[in-house]
View 1 (spheres, rainbow, N blue to C red):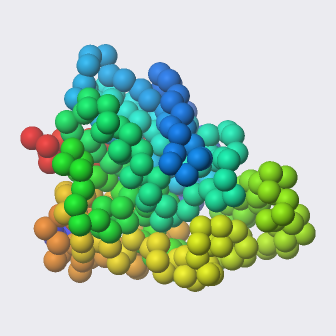
View 2: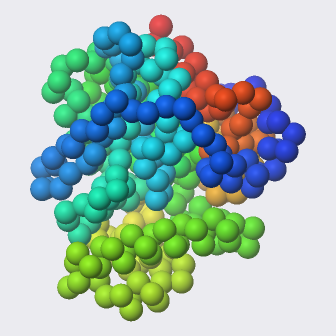
Length: 321
């Protein structure tokens, strides 16, 4: 599909990508709470915590949302998506990745940008309920990469999965890591590094034979964390191999359901690889929308609802009816 001309207009001060990114991530409040948490026991002995919200009337439609790096299902961008969909007749399931629900997971491994087996198991669990005829998937940032990889790496999807949206998604993990290391992104990289190291210190207490405190302390970059833990804990020989095998860019041509990739041109986390115009032009299913503004998951408007929420709802509904 051709690249879509975006209708998003950023309010004056939010044309600055850093203001938009930081405000959306730290200051936004969403008046919404999920109805219940369900613990899904996984086949490998671990677990996922799922946050559910339900529309007023029994629904045959479900949206499943995937959060970003060091995030969880209670982040404002997740709750904003839950709110707009439950208001329009959809049930909602927010997937907390392993160790992201406030409790460390049981295994040494946790989550990564390519761990599509967890999404597949969640979907199998949902489909066993035999309740939903139509399922839409939404992913943010790292969750967007995981979602797009899932869609493109499989020859066949469950028939109930109809449409998908990925927001602020790094399609080339190595390139986006290099972007995060730029001086303009020092605030973000330092915050990610601190959050991830704090989680590793907690994991070290549970797995002292696998990790040493001194190893964690020595990690002075996101790359070092991925070399020490993310890659090896998930079966990759190095961070480079992890980035290569898990980047969704290589899987985009294989996507076979209508899928919107919404990436802002001024997103400082992204590089040219995350704007795959030629792939979109040659695909019958991948729609690429690249607003000039929006930062990283910061598509703010002159109202409570953000553009990514209204756009996701519009795109999904247009491809169901």
